[in-house]
Length: 489
Image (cartoon, rainbow, N blue to C red):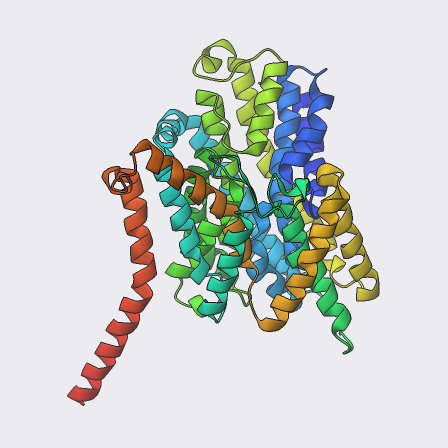
């Protein structure tokens, strides 16, 4: 049995994680890294339990700022703001946060049970991913650009190309030769995601609001739908199940992570929806999909860590360090040598997800009221949080200038109607696609058939092609059917 002390520490870690997640720029990785030294004096069970609480809480809470102020609190909540903020602007922030909370709880809890019962099988599948499979996964992810481009696919493609170009800045992944750094050593590590994220979604929104001279009516949020209605739950049930599966599998693939899981889940929800045009305008499924996926990735990322000693993402890499500090090496023998710790991990994750459900619903009313703050208070606060969140990454003022630069660029792109989502997608997936493509070519001595002779990479590429051509084929089939009906009449 897990002690009361461990559960209390999980709860405290959860609250800290929620604060980290709400504040723009403070990622789950940063939150766990900051708290890890405090756990060194604890027992392994208590120390790991605390960090798991921070992990789960921060992944969930990133959705709150995404919904309320259109700034993803963490990179994992990038897709949540596509439909979350439009709902908040309609006065339905409570409904949006409620669905995010329940979806997060279901996705996170289900992934724990997958971790408990199917960890070895999922870990073996994840191990089969080499450079060709990672390249195919990145290409599959880039196919989402069409789904997050809004009403204009050409503008979405332009945004995607901007993101892919940004991904080339820094050291060449194979030769380590500097590219497009313009003499700035700060760019050797590339353009960081968080400054771009806060600039495009945070500062650009502030500039747009400041330029809006009209009197903005303060929304009175509808707080009666904090607990999702049966209608909403029925509508989102398949989406949540699909997102949970995607999040768990993608989370278990090393280096993939929650942002990719949430974007893939959002794309699949839109592709399978009967009303795909409503996505990006306040569709409740657009919240259930990414939130179930990014929280399911927490349990998925622990699968390769516990079974194979391979971190699934940045947070689990830090957790690996916490294990080592306590003289514990994850791997197959962990389950035999430390059964009490394994039980503590399972219990902590389940308790953390129940804590998300309770705390999220209890505090949803408070969070929803935040958007009713007058903008002459809200806008300076958003600006300050964006600056602090950016500076805290590396304690480097250059990152703040990068954030300001992308704030101005975001303001111009917003005026031109170019969406931000594809830029972020290109920035995340560009390095994965480039480095693994080149590694694959090196592996095969320049033979490109390596992508088609490996089953998983071939399957991913085939699915990508089907996703890209299916709208064209569907449109052609519908037009042909209408012509046939017209001819028959």
